[in-house]
Length: 259
Image (cartoon, rainbow, N blue to C red; front, side):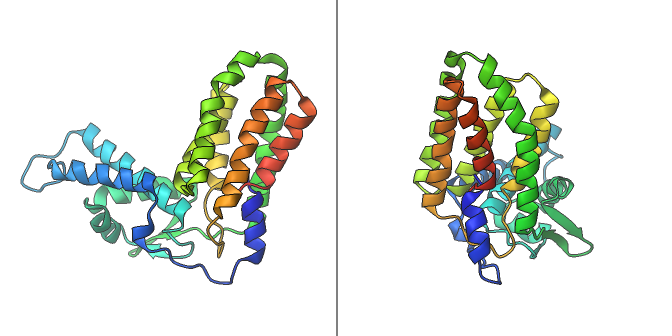
């Protein structure tokens, strides 16, 4: 599902275009709305005792998801520095949960800390994307081939709603929603291997492959739709135990992903 990005990276202009905040996709809007509702309930007022630990972590988690969606949507531009205070005002919360969420993104490699300024969104290149695709293929292709030999057809049928969710997000051009449903589908497939360490490594690689390239344009809806269609084709091949098609689809999927 890196095909659209590989094509667009080659044709991308030299500078990254900033996407206005009001273009946030539906998933980010939902996350930010939840944050604001939490704030409205008084979870961050200075006149009240400190909020319970679980509440603060909940707000941080919502901010983290909103920031991840903003990364995928292109709202957080590679190379730009963002202040936790400014982002906190934008989300209607204090700077603390934003800073905590940004620290998490820094540990994942999505941003880097700029002392006394904030966080800079990591600039990535087509070469890095190709390297990620290669590593993902090395890990997931053998696993999916093994699963194709051993998993009954009924189990693959249970995953079809997840594949269809990616096509629905792609059809409306919801890039953040597509990224989330894309990871959910791959996670469900790999979960059948029963290896938690594999899931953690694959999830990290998958999320990194979805971050925007330096100067890359926003993926076209047609590329998302084509990318999503490969999920259904993969399920059909896994159900039929067609190992040749499974291997070809997975490799094509990684090297040609729209995200």
